[in-house]
Image (tube, rainbow, N blue to C red; front, side):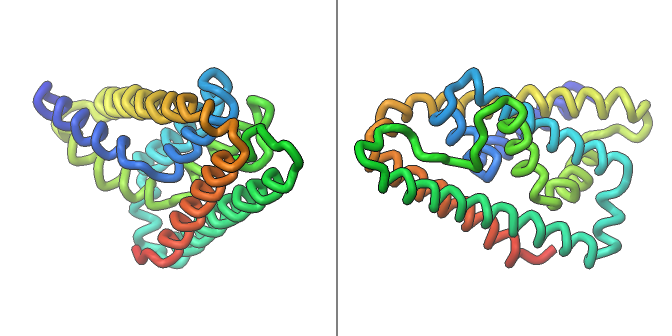
Length: 213
């Protein structure tokens, strides 16, 4: 892989990773509720799922999903249902907290996730809810691999580069959530924020369900 190809890959991943989606929304909401340090568990969950899906794509299973649209559609609808459930839970959590007298704490911006393990699981579940990531990786990675050179070292470089860029954007989004925390201490603003994030999760899930491969 030449330096020029690698830099092009970095630029492509930097732009794609920056686009707001369920992963970034979850990281930002966890940053607002749990702080930057604790939300690193969420980041680790998201990244683990994405790296796993990229490895699956490298193994050729992305092409298998294209050949078996029923399997892909089943996974897609399951992922969509999870995101919708997550959004509804977030919305209902905001309503519950808003009814609490003197509520000044942040409403749940995700399923009750207090331990590092729970935060990790939440991040992993959201990141792995979209099987299109497998197909995307299967289509993207081969474009930057030189078939005349050993494949594994190139794949490792691409994977590590992706991880660094993805985590960098996680930190940006989580830090943005932390900056919002002071405003979200106000019950009305906190409830509105939770309703907004819940609505966005429902929107992501609905879009995924309606999107055709």
